[in-house]
Image (cartoon, rainbow, N blue to C red; front, side, top):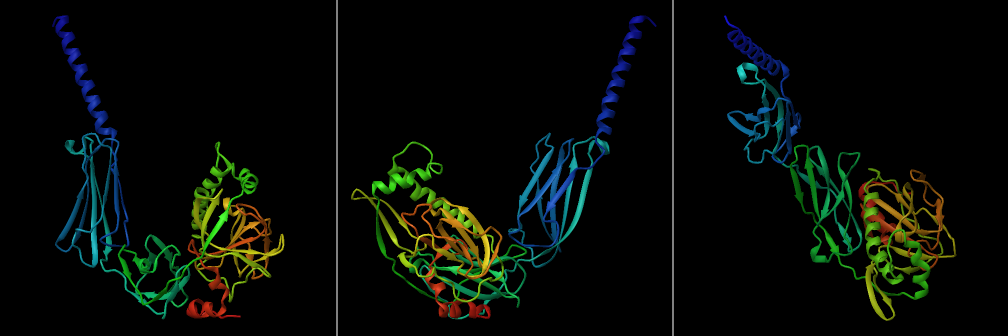
Length: 438
């Protein structure tokens, strides 16, 4: 055999060995099946349950699917895969599956892009057992005579016939969570927001069970309209020049004192209200208060809840806002008592409110004490009714020494006057909750 033929044979053999080596590398490279995950993977599900399936494999995916079955009925979700895809996601619900209440089986399976099984790839399969529930919970109201004033607070007590992941009262886009009672029922403090007209106010009880089924119903009620005062706030240059430098950090940029005031009065006020809504989301599930709420002693009312304010500069109206608390004026740096027992939910400086303390009284009920010159409590402190929590002042957007006192229900400001009335509290709240009044 001449050298040329030997060279050809050797070269072909080398090429074949290289090809076999490459094939062997890819054949043995991936020996693991695809990784798969389905959530939820156990428990009770329903038509609205949001399923998410995930699969991945470094060698690629040929197939990923979830097959649900109940009796002779099946529902299949297949991933839309392109060549080379190494990951796939399935997001779906069972709204169109047509299953009935009872046991439900699901099998998730995937095949990778390896050369195993004569080029068919490695397969993985997982079987799961679920329970399907398409029936929404049933809500029964146990409290009576729900009388609520515009700008005021209501309290409803009710029962739900199964475990729920969430329940409460919805008012438009607002949500007031319900809280479990010792007897297995629920209680919910809700508001009639001052900005809603009587014909717009349509509160509904809602409950969502563990399968995601939602129940919603109205309830017997009597809602009373209330008129709110109008007020004119004049803005002298002396006030603007004295106060607006305090807000340069909150409203950076070059602007006149009037321009800064308008930005503070609109944008910073809205931001502070959003902060209060967030603070009020962390509440005790049990009532911490007892009886009537205290008012700042020997104080005169300087502004009321729901006052429609017009701000005037040099004879021209430059802004409109609504006052969401009651301003109380006593002597300078007057000691401020906690209106009722509770827990300190927040302390610090909050924009237009200046130095402030927020107390949580449970069930979403909170009180705010603003414009303080001194704060005497720390976040997390348990306070008794009457404990001195600070002193009045003129911090924030205050023209003089006073206390801005506000009451919130799940982040919505309500009329504090109701909570100063022992009969109102007993007839509308504590009597329904079975609270012992001192």
